Length: 221
Ligand SMILES: O=C(CO)[C@H](O)[C@H](O)COP(=O)(O)O
Image (cartoon, rainbow, N blue to C red; front, side):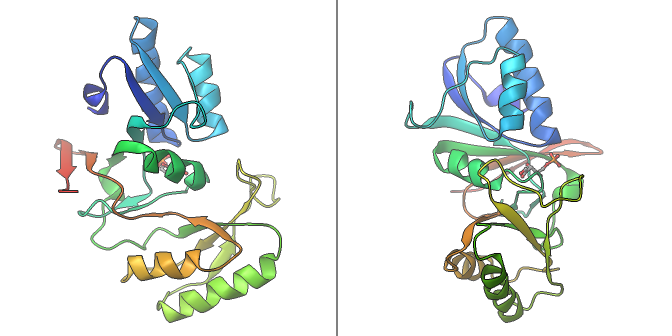
């Protein structure tokens, strides 16, 4: 479905994760048939996949704006606010989405929730001063009524997970995020926080795969 939104000559943001990977595969098939596009990947993993499919890549130093970013999500609500960063690419994903005229999310129905927060919120932090940053985030969690705590994300090796930007991720267990805008501001006020995985008012359209077919969700923004 998302591929129907893509027109020849467009500049595209390519998301990260298993769902976005599928989209990149389909885009690669089109490119092999002569389809014209120029893309900015949101992670090194997606960049490697796109290169292997000969999808032309550029970056946001070379071009100003993108037409559409197509990406997955860990959670979305009916207002198309999102939690992202399960794959650890939230910083580049947010930079690329913010540089796009439109963000389209592709997801399966298990990701659709009434209220965000069941999925742990990824918070990308600078390794310097981790303890101080952690304590400040914990205070925000308490103020926001989080049900759980914070966990440093580990890689499969057991070492700390390190993002493409060289940062760490703390996953915050809320259960329910009742004031996403206030939470976003409070987290970004902490000096060691680089970014968080709440994508508020950024997405205009979502294609959600359900047992009955693909459901399109639109917002006015
Ligand atoms: O935000 C992301 C990566 O940082 C992904 O979009 C999100 O984790 C969804 O991934 P998947 O499609 O594999 O469920």
